[in-house]
Length: 386
Ligand code: COA
Image (cartoon, rainbow, N blue to C red; front, side):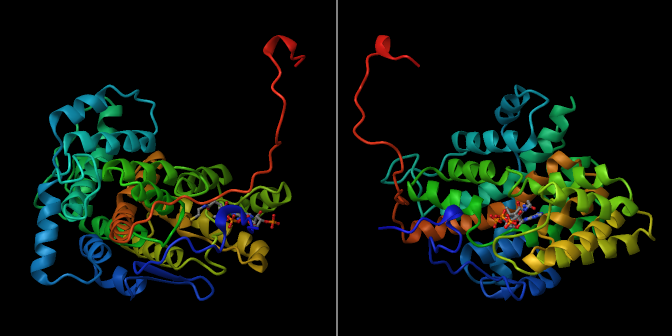
């Protein structure tokens, strides 16, 4: 009766106006604007507004959106108290998932006729700003708290990216690094109906509260087959150690039928356009630092060459996670925070899909093909021999 497609590969689960991928040509656009144009000209703040509202904002619209983000960065004291109770060994993505969910209790949506905990399109923009603004604060707070220090208070005079670097390091952010981070945020902000966005849409379709909806996105992004791959890439590059050992490592992995992290994508049969832009950014950073960068970039280039030689015939090339971690490492960010940075950007896309889902909602309820047994006879426990 039904065709079962594992992983729903190629099965359309929605209609969307938010982003578009041409996997053969390696193209990505948000709301019709090519990703190259956005990374060259836009900012994360403007891109988030574009994703949420469908149009590039006017100067006044952008100022208001940006101001909303700046004013919502602060965190109530009790959120910090709560975070303080978490074990210092907790992974940042587990902390982020728990704390984003908790924010819904501290910053509830305005009550409307559907009740206090329901999703509401009326307050969707305000709620989106509240969540997007506070994700960086949560991530930076955890970095300090888990190391036994007080968090650094957010500042209103800095951009989204620069303020994050400020909160993370407590030092005046380097404008070039803030620019690189800003481009990374634009690049990670949206990517059609991937696993975490689908999770957001499914939970959003039940009219669950948006903080819980975003928590489901964070949970889904955390796995190494999705956003967690950026941390796995750095572990792989560190394990390889030198560029000369890259080819042998790739050979050994593939012979053992293991994956090369940061390679492959369900949608792209060519190099992910985001990997191309991130590689270019890394080259700019090398130039900015007059070549004074760590060894990981050269190892990554060698892995790309070796893996492409073996995997290109299968349409497997570097994806977004391949170079992002190398850049973050150069910014002094610790690897287990990489996926949280991904979430801090992707939250804009998640909320755009949440809004789009609510505007024409029908609860997700797919079907299954039952392959278990039928009509079994119940045996009392004392008569069972196994
Ligand atoms: N390294 C080596 N082989 C890979 C590979 C990789 N990174 N990614 C896919 N393949 C191979 C698989 O082994 C499989 O080979 P086979 O047909 O001979 O069995 C084939 O390509 C299809 O892979 P599959 O895992 O079924 O593709 P998918 O579309 O279900 O999964 C990913 C896509 C992204 C999950 C997958 O490519 C992957 O696991 N990549 C590594 C993790 C990663 O970087 N994730 C971040 C994505 S942005």
